[in-house]
Amino acid sequence: MAIKVIAQRRELKIGKNPGVKKFVMRPDLYIPIAEKKVFAEASTHSGISAGVIKAAWDAAGEVIRTWATEGHSIPIPGLGTMRFGVRSKAVEKLEDVKTGLITTRRIVFTPNVEVKEELKNTSIQITCLDEEGNVLKRVTSGDSGEVEDPENGGENQNQGGNQGGNGGGTGTIDQGGGNNGGGNGGDDDNGGGTLNEG
Image (cartoon, rainbow, N blue to C red):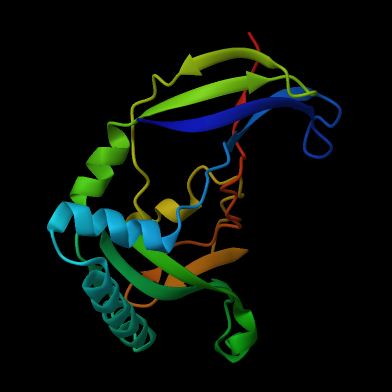
């Protein structure tokens, strides 16, 4: 098994060097798996009927949604924990604190050790394409396998955002978490990194 990534050469329109061509990475498209298939597969592995598994999963989902909106961090058995939070602007003066500072509401998922290990040990296959989509080469990752940790401010790492200083810009406030910095870190899961030629 491997995670598939596309590195496609394209001309940068903005930034320090507009007009320069670089290889920009993005995840390869994954085909969504139907919910019905998930229950059928779980039934095969457990010996429990798919209908019973679906009923239990639906009930668990309702409990998770309810408790998360009450500010709890909810365990998702076998996967990790989930909680709700917000991304907001930071201000210096008390009188400037208001709900308008909240820029987005967030769902924060923290994987458990087993899920992190699975990701760490999964290879990444990179397919390099030119501007027209022609395959130039394929490589397999040799990275350290480090997994980002959202509990320790990892949401602002490697996402193309500018880390701000002195509380300026956009920060993150998670329920039960605290302020994770004042960076202007926009989530850019679809490719902010580059693979330079050479």
